[in-house]
Amino acid sequence: MAYLYPFIAVGAGYFFVVFVLLRLTVPFMGFNGFKPPKKLPEEVRKAVVYLEGKSTDQQTYLQAVYNLVMKKTLDQWRHSRFQAATRIHRLAVRDLKEIWLTQDFIYCGPINFVVFVLLVKSKYFTDKDIRVKHVFLNFVPHQYLQVKVGKKWVDVDPAGSGIRKQPLGTHASFFG
Image (cartoon, rainbow, N blue to C red; front, side):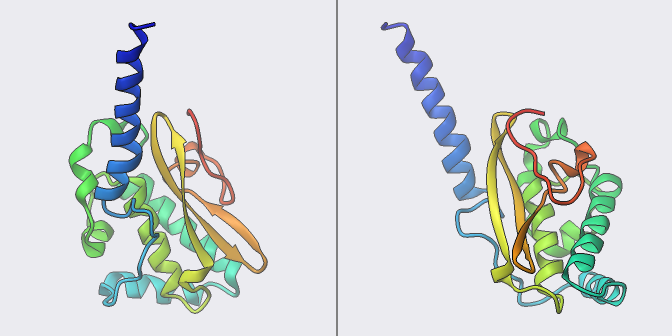
């Protein structure tokens, strides 16, 4: 039995570091959700205006935001599940303009923050319509959003289920 104690200690330490300390220190992964920025970068403001112009209601706006963020996630930010383990220094990215313009990998938190900002700065959603959720994915916490459209909550997960070719309304969890 004594040989199990080191394994239990290592496991407990891992879960404390990954599921508590990281959530307390990494931008956008905290326990309190997101706060909308006071000042919006011009590029983001133009995107909101453009997306509102091609949308007729909450659902079409949410789908347009998801499509735009998926394009940025795959083509511009080159987000992939395998880079998460090797690009640890990218956890510290927190400036919205830098996130929007970067041509480098970013994690699920900043991607979801972009979705959040595009939604709450539109005429269709408020911050009360968006919940930040966390799940266990490949031994680390993964973040996705739930957005209230009418009376139902829709999962939004471009960095999880989106990169796995799943549609709006799904989220990744456990292994994959």
